[in-house]
Length: 249
Ligand code: PEP
Image 1 (cartoon, rainbow, N blue to C red):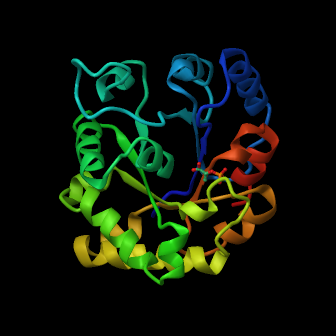
Image 2 (tube, rainbow, N blue to C red):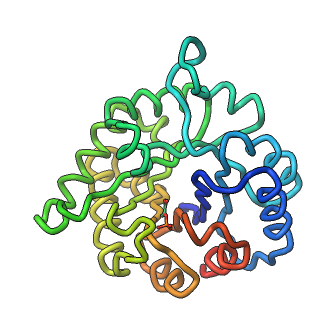
Image 3 (cartoon, protein in one colour):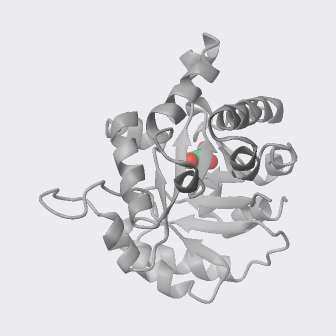
């Protein structure tokens, strides 16, 4: 049985005081769904968030990491450093990392390996740009992103991956893929996994949708059979909206 997950990607938002406030607001929300809930604050707030949410049903995850264990990589953070403060999951491959920091599939494959070598779970993001969709290439683009960064993994390693389909044209734009577009792509992704890893892995894989999910559209998107949750940007910055999305299951 695959899990439903709702993860909030805070991006480069919230200083320490704002993090404290949002966390206390999150704690006061009632959870009525069985979805796993995660938040991804900035590196500077991970330790505080982790400590504050120790007793809660909200996992604190990282937005990024480097592939090396340590060394001369000024400004970077490694998997073992994240692990040492209790972080067990990392988001990799977000379209903003790909677009603004030149992260390629090849680099992401190395990051995935480093995370898994440290027994971390990976939320792996991918998705087509608007031009790809207009040209009818969305499935080919998504398939190559998944294959290039993940298909070197064996079945057991693959079980530590959560996939997040995020069409770039829907991220932070207010434009959402229709529930049907999301379902079609998620079904295609599951079929691609099935061809490579077989039924068990593809059936058990949690595939999140990301791109302008809000309280008003979450129920319809999450109602689709191959959509197992969401990666939420803007709406995760308001506790009430975020929990309305969590409770949309
Ligand atoms: C994201 O950054 O992963 C995202 C989906 O953002 P938003 O919900 O704001 O579109």
